Image (cartoon, rainbow, N blue to C red):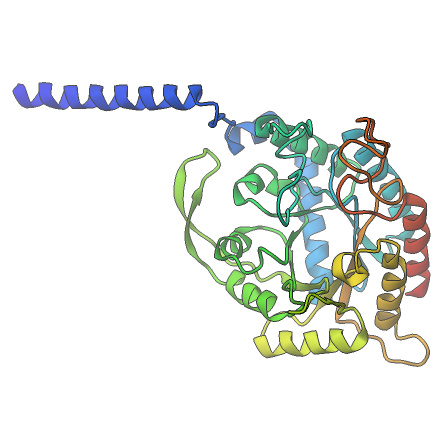
Length: 377
């Protein structure tokens, strides 16, 4: 009897301690509860038709990667999504253009709701949707999921960059292609995450311009891992990842030890990267990021870089084509350039359809460029 009473008291004490801990967490201004991935996915559920569409679009990207689809993969869109109305406007225009170009181009829209920062800065719609510096991830992941569903309903495959593995739990069922950035390609956590993702993943070369980091990440990601993570109910769990065979290299340029910019979209650099990939026993296919260090931070250079790379693939001027080039990345929005967080005049009024992160080419420039690329193929 005494033993039963003791056990009951221990259970009651543990329950009280847990309730007290939850109360303290709820009252801690540094701890703000966010609903679980399962709860948000149930609230903002995908239709059966959308689930099938995304599954088919992922397979189309795999087919391009594996050489079973001859189209050129184009990942284009805003550097980051900050204005839902402008993002949908861009998406509608891109969906309409896609209807004209889809026999030669597999167009995927960038839907980046997380932004990597070299130091500090706005981290994206998922983190700070009101852009006031206070952050609200409950609202952020909700608005991100709502927007991405609306974009997917336009018929477009979506791409994103995976930064925080926990954020991806809220959005992974909407994404047809994922990027891993130059800074996170070395991270064991991100390599394990890629091993668990259900879609093709492009891994960028290191910030030094080398493909070696990406090759190591690809080798790691294609294998199964035992890792600590969260399940869709927010419970800490051991994950047995299945391994992801559908990874490839993204060439984005870099900087050498002296801080000088290195570009790697030319034929010689692409050939060297393919040799490195083959030596590592991974997919010997590359996508070229026409922005970032390849463009030397000059957004209009994306246009010439894209044409140069597609010319390499097509084999113009009696030169053999290079079908190992599978695609391009572009930063593009409705208006050219970028603006500050407070707008172009610093008065808090943002210009509609203009980036607040990296500068982009305009919609008019994008439509003309994609049509030109289509005609080159």
